[in-house]
Length: 446
Image (cartoon, rainbow, N blue to C red; front, side):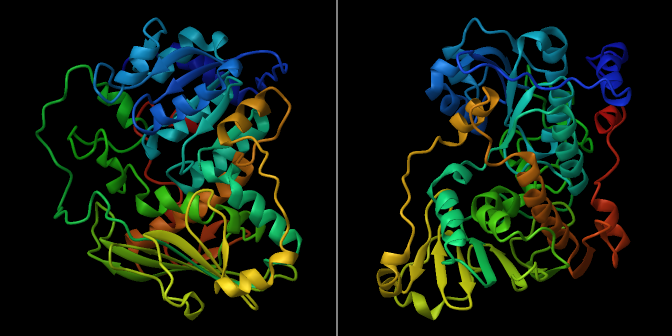
């Protein structure tokens, strides 16, 4: 393992295999949380600044990013000029592990897993950006590690602490949302890879000075550096990202998946793939998920639409109403609900129907912690996180299954009990993804 000795990693590997687990430390309500930010630009900077709104709860002790000294990381570097910086998260934990209570992980999808697994094995509480991981198997391992190490976890789908979360929960409990049979979710904004003509991974670009490309690659397949991989376009590629579905699905389907108790689908179908490609995501796709009956709840069909001109069917109940660039339609046997994204609450359509039901709709107080404060308060033992890995890992596995359909096409039959794809050996193998690069196998044993 370049830049990190096997002797050093052996300390962590021993934790995971010998059964000597390090549990997360619960802090008192008046104790500040020593936090490390891993990924200091883009969404990582946004997460850091959001956590810093609760300054009385946090103490920043480390910054970690594969490429400091760039406009991407400049804001956090300027705000914390004296805080230790690392380009390799392994070195950071080796040197400062005893000083860190928790960390954020806001890096490309393919690197969520090794960072979070090492952090949890050391008893660190983790806030991991969405989607939780890059593969179905990684989600399973992360969920298990969180349980074993008794750490506080939160996935960064911020709307899961917003009005839609509390509304969906209350409306389900009050019987307003019931007998749901269909959900259409869509993301029709332009994506980075739209219009690309790709027949392989790019080669030949010069590696920028100061960029730790070895750490950026992590356990994923090795390709040469290129600006279309870092810092922003990695989401376009199957080897590193989870596309539009992994990016926006956590903000659109989170409440439906949790409160309708959907679990895993029985069948995933690639209804449409425009411009399928071996390396990058389609220019547009329609993916259907068939979920079975759960108790008294009827079967549900969820259909995902992405692509600029790939819109879901327009519900007649909407009339001349607007359909946003991203959102969802939830169809029950009696009512139709329209929603947008993140924490925005649902509306019953047509609007007249919502007015007719106004006296029956539960009143919500709105006095709740946001997603970031919820994570911090859970570490202090006064709240429970709303998107822990026990909730967000199964949700992310839905996106991982959808990505396989986007990548391979056709119909995939999923055995919910055995957690296997039974009709496509290639797809079933991809539940675990490609073998980790040499030297990164240890993270799968923590």
